[in-house]
Image 1: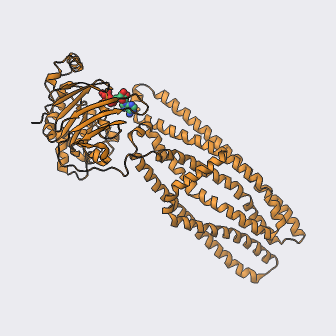
Image 2: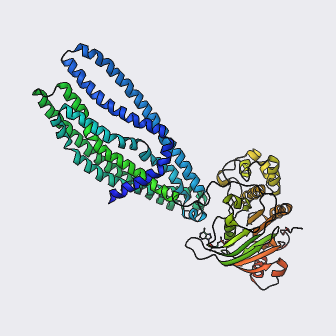
Image 3: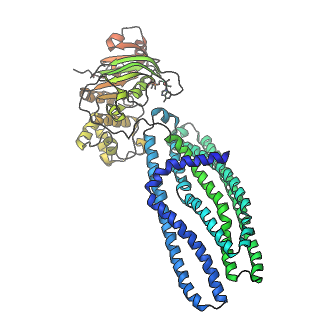
Amino acid sequence: MIDMLTIKDVRTTYSIMKPYMIAHRKAYIGLFLLLFVDIALTLAFSWFFGDLTDAAIHSQFGRMKWLVPLGGFLVVVSITSTYLTTLWETIATNGVKRDFSADVFKHIMQLPGKHIDDKHSGDLLAHFTNDIHNLDGIIGSSLIHLIKLPFIYVAVFIYLLQISWKLALVCVLVAPVAMVSGVIFGVMLRTNNRLIQDLVAQMNVLLNETFSGLFVIRSFLMEKFIFAKYVSRNQELYALELRNAKLRGWFYVGSQAAASFTFLISLCLGSYYVSDGILTVGALLTFINLVNHLVYPLTELAGQWAGLQKSVSAMERIFKILDIELESVSLPEAIPYKPMLSSIQFQDISFSYEGQKPVFDQFNLQIPAGKVVAIVGLSGAGKTTLFHLLQGFYLPQVGTITINGHSTASLTVSEQRSLFAHVSQETVLFSGTVRENLQLAKPGITDVQMIQAATVAGIHSFITSLPCGYDTEIGERGSKFSGGQRQRMAIARALLKDAPILLLDEGTSALDSETEYHVQKSMEKLLHNRTTIVIAHRLSTIQNADLIIVMDAGKIVQMGRHEEIIRQDGLYRRLYRLQSEKGVPSDGHSFDTRVV
Ligand SMILES: Nc1ncnc2c1ncn2[C@@H]1O[C@H](COP(=O)(O)OP(=O)(O)OP(=O)(O)O)[C@@H](O)[C@H]1O
């Protein structure tokens, strides 16, 4: 049962890897041909030893004269073959790995949002640091050996039959024992390897989380707990590796025993045949030289099979990802839009995250073109989810989102995402320079545009105060910047994207009141010719918005301008009063964003 499954898995694996291997067919064909050269060399060398010995014993100098250069020729062929095998194996294996890992990477970039939620970044990382390296077993040396071993077995057996059929048949008796033990150990090794791969992936998750959250760990004094967790996983890995080594150890002991037993039989029986004149000394030498090839292909076959199984189980983990349907056919790219005013409509939207209770049920909302619309509401009301749906990170189960009368379902991912510039709750910057981070907003951004956006976002003077200005490295995820500086970088990046719709999710929450005021003032003129949707917790910042939408548990409970809804006895007034009492500024620095 287990083996049937294995063969099916191997077949699936090869059907997926086939196009990659075909792309490197020249190297594979070369390796396949060299395989026969290798078999021929094995037989030729054994024959050479035997024949040279017999020629020496019988003082046949004439024969020795042409045997010696022939030996030299065999050595040259052997060296060339070894060199080419190494070279072509590297070309084939690394070529396939390069292409396959690029495709896996591309696939992950295009996974739909709901599948990204299930995957841990450490787990995804393990596919590249661990799983793909295990490919060797199915595309490299294991594959070549698996093909070679049956050929060499048959070739050697036929050759040995010709030397002494009795001796060859006696030696072949060991075959069933070697094969059965090989298969049993192969299955045991596969199970163990699966456990090792899963554990390595879990350890990657732990390491990833630890190193990205070192300060939180320190603040909560979690060092001992995390360390103990790591030590325990490490110990588990050690135990599994040890079990693996023992299995392999027993497996090699078995193969060694079978090989020594066969060697002894052929030596003892062969010596008897020599003394009886049935075999020459040279023929016995040739036989003894070759007899190991009757044992090792059988045990090795199982060993290579185990290597292949290790690769197959690593690939199974990757295939689970490759099986997921993608949200776009190719990698999305920015499409430049001419300045335009875009209206947005949510029509009868029902949406829930995978396996969660609905966030929206029959939700309707009309956002007029060119206005500043603010969304407020309690935590978990669904504000950020609206942004996710707008950008197509998640698709509604029911209903339509239309932008300027076009359903988003009719837009490509590139078209849809190019419509929006988004400043999210959590600012993500990438390692690299300030310039690189800003320029990734859109291809072809000039220095002048970059400085203009940074000035509007209130970060230009800080950037110029850095040691290398715009060429300063910002550290991993922008770790050398403060929260407010990171947010201003995100605002500058969004402005540089120059999209028709600006989405600000708590876009200025990390700024102090004064900076927030200046940033908002500078942004006012940029908001012309754009539709802006702001999610804000600080109600002071949205008093001048054209429309305020108040949401509660996925429903719109109030809608209108500040002056209108503050008069109503509702959630907005409650929130507003609460913030005023708490001392959150409710007047003064307001977001004057009306389009005039
Ligand atoms: N990726 C996700 N998977 C599952 N559930 C989610 C996911 N993101 C949000 N939710 C749930 O959906 C609901 C709406 O979340 P959302 O982030 O849209 O709220 P919000 O109004 O933006 O809240 P906040 O003001 O706290 O940011 C919440 O109950 C939340 O737990």
